[in-house]
Structure formats: structure tokens, C-alpha cells
Length: 101
Image 1 (spheres, helix red, strand yellow):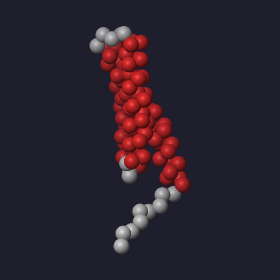
Image 2 (cartoon, helix red, strand yellow; image 1 turned 45 degrees about the vertical axis):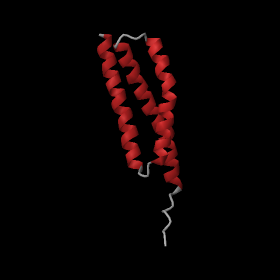
Image 3 (cartoon, helix red, strand yellow; image 1 turned 30 degrees about the vertical axis):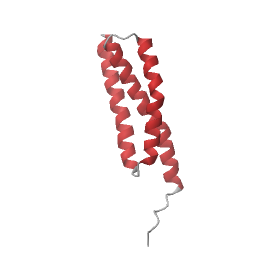
Image 4 (cartoon, one colour; image 1 turned 60 degrees about the vertical axis):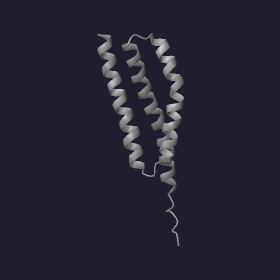
């Protein structure tokens, strides 16, 4: 006889929803920043790079948002989304300062 999966608490659902919305936004923002800096460093016009990256940003946000609900362990979502956002923003900030000098 199959057993039913354990029920998640209300706090767990609220935590997952908030992490999905805000974490996906932060990761998308970090990746977009990194992509724009990379394109500008390779000779693209800033506004062209910005517009091109922001068009693709919707797909990145949607993929991360849906993935965060599909992943069974919340710690994996925190590690991937939080870590990815922090690392991509830090690299983009460092790279941007290097380009401005």
C-alpha cells in the first residue's frame, strides 16, 4: 500500500513562494547585470546590450521560478538561487569597476 507524501506546513509554503518570487528576481538581476557587463566589455553598445539581455531575462526568471517549485529540497533552492545571485552580482560589480578605470 503506497504511503502519502508528508504535508507541508503553511510556513513552508509561504517560505517557498517568497523565495521563488524574490530569489528568482535576484538571480535574474545578477545574471542580467553580468551579461550586460560582458557584452559591453566585448564592444557592444550599452543600450543594445541592455535591451537584448532584458528580453531574455523573462525566460530566465520563468525557468528559475518554476524550478524552485519543482525542487523538493528548499536548501537546494537557497544554495542555487542565493549563491548564484550573490556570485553573479559580485563578479559583475568587480568587472564593471575594472572597465570604468
